[in-house]
Length: 503
Ligand SMILES: [Zn+2]
Image (cartoon, rainbow, N blue to C red):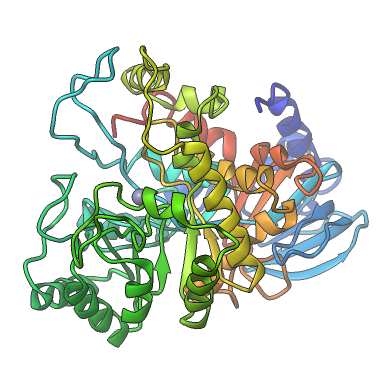
């Protein structure tokens, strides 16, 4: 939802930042400058809003990310990049080195941990009004715009979930961590582990299990912290990759097709992408190690979510500790209707060309396309399976997969994933947990991030409103704290206006 009043809100925040060091006579504008991040590294200087040694968020509602009920009127104390105390809401007198923010009417929640995020975009050359385009489809790196869009929209940690420019991604992480560039904490996924062919030219093609092992070792040596297998990998290659990764304590996920979910779980995979959309175990033409024609749609259509096959699959995934990543935004457009709802801020982030492509891909086909399998049935079955997996204690993660028709954008898509979970029967508190704490648990970082609790990193999102009762309020991001520094969401968005789709 657009928020026409944002500038006014910011003025209020500005006015409420107090600086005891300058005494009661300091003008309110000057008081803010006291915390204007001037002496910080360049990205913090440019986009930081709150950089005081001690920050107190007063009178704020907390949605803590654990699934617990929202708690109204609290104070959150941040020191040295960490949350040091959570107290009953109270006015706090100005003190030297302390920024006090009056957050009546606002909610603080954990920073989003995006588990199917990307640092690239998809281009279809010569796309026209009949939706024809030329090959090859390419995926340009979005190193400039994507990290800003993620951070602006409340993503403080993300997995890159398959890299097309691994050196750029690795160096980006170094520069973000040093404060030279704005962006979330990054779990860098290595190049896609793909078999002998792929839809995307920019993926390496493994030739053997030994090649898979060497690829994992090479990139792990260079700092990659996760891997993703892709649609045409063989079981033997996947096994070699998983074993090599696990030897170094690195996890492997997969957008699979040639290997079924059960086969992958048996081989030790840690996570499966795209909910239950790409499991191929019941595809009628499925042959071992070969991707099937429907790439999993036949299986999803045939699998009764409350039937024995579904129960057996879910029990097996849970017993093997395999997580599942829900990526609803990338499928939303297939379901029909005017989906997703257009969001002005997202349109403004795109280049004119990206916007044009987005509208060309969005218009209905004439004559209407008649898919072999009803997308609404697939959507329904997937959601029921995700619910069933979650209900028996499966670790359900969330991420947007910002690709598709160009209507899923970094950051905006992470918020949309949460909204779609709620639209499909998860409570707001469950959906926020899936998008925050569950990701932290998967990454093994839940002692540091993923919930609002004393002792954890101050990776927090301040939104106007109350997402625990109205989930679309997660779109009203004002300030995003990362390691205790409060970034200005609007300034970040302004800096990438008209850029997404270019660089
Ligand atoms: Zn993806």
